[in-house]
Length: 245
Image 1 (cartoon, rainbow, N blue to C red):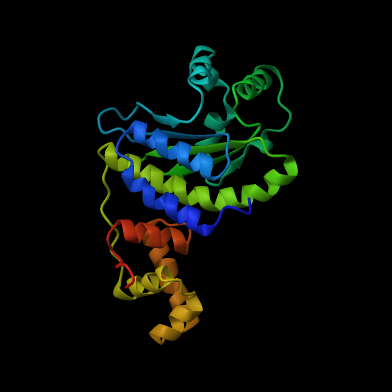
Image 2 (image 1 turned 135 degrees about the vertical axis):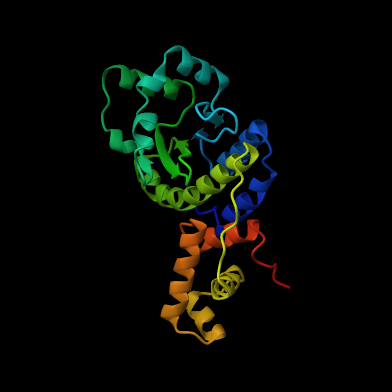
């Protein structure tokens, strides 16, 4: 995974605003799958529709044949990703399912036959209004390579999953109001956006390192961000930051 840099994440985030409907969501997911050398990506949102809250929003890069087979076999009843994912707060590594038997073994075996990766990671997203989503990626990496790549996936896809979910909410009629940040919180995020560390922000603003970290933590909390990079991206999208000269 050495060819994937932080710029790839930022570039992917910058393209989320281009998502306007389900087809463009799928095109975006295909681009991300190619960028990260993944077999497949799937977004499954619940409670995001403006008209029918029970109608799920599904955007996947799976082969159409697998989608049809999944529905015909009613695999949603045994799919552990769906059954367990919505109850999780942290990413779910499919290796946690262990050795499968019976119908579940058939499920994973047939998924592999259709090109779904043998290994997978699912990131759950819990919205503020009862909306939820699962963002799943799959790969055929070896166990050793997967252990290394998974760390990158957990970092990047927790950020991407949240942004994609927010975008889906917006295009489905659930636009959210931007968070209100204090001037100091905005100043700290602005310097982070320009590549400064928290320590450098403290020097520039004449504050203690601890104080800057508190402002950044508060900004992340208000923006529902998982990291400073995530917070900067959300703030940019909301028009809260200005572009550096």
